[in-house]
Image (cartoon, rainbow, N blue to C red; front, side, top):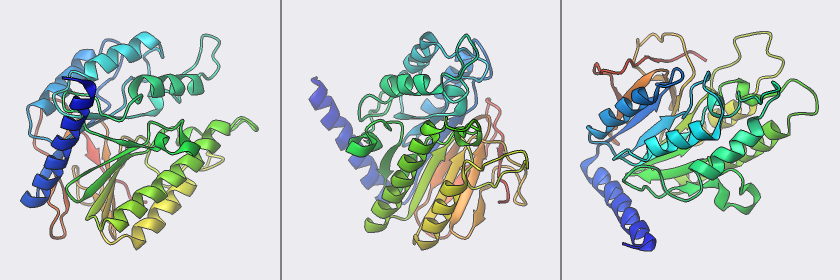
Length: 314
């Protein structure tokens, strides 16, 4: 089968998935986060992928491809890409701080920008997800002004818009040193445009909900007074403002550790129609009902991989 034929088949499968989900009023998706704890943790990631493969899922999002204490080498990234491609489900990568923002060269200097560009070329070179089921994605890089930001992607299933945002947990990779924040500033502009487009498109389509995937939690204010500048401030205000005007539900799923909520582990912390959920280890399954007040529910059933779910009060 030619690549063009394969692409058309993938598109048809996704459209069918969306229609079926809308008719059945329910579908599920998975999120894998922080299963990589150190060198040689490929088996942990492979196990998480195999467990998601065994479930009936519309797609899977992998939050991160590398542990913080692993080297930022091309070999590590290429090995992880090959592993993610083994997924039977369509698998979308959402970048974390350990993937690029925390990388340093042999001299101890930041190599974040170099590694981010490498990851963009390796993981986000085309308009499809990883895995056997190639889910068509709309990347921000299709917009001429933001052609470098291929890691930001969106897709639809049923009446829900899903999208990734490159927001690393290290205060959004805000660099304290004066004059060295061009990467942060450029990405801030790109993310602002991307968020506007997501909400605008979902509003025009009258979708029931929006799900955003990120590494850091932009909805939480800084807990430390030592932080000179809140790297999430603009993003937080924008998401909150647009969510207030959006008719449906908005859910942020992130990989940043959080305190226990009043609802207990595994619950989504809601403020109005805006909710957030922390996935800090293992994988979880969420079900989209698309009717009634509980649009998103978390499947907190025990699994072999440890899962820590929590929410935090903003």
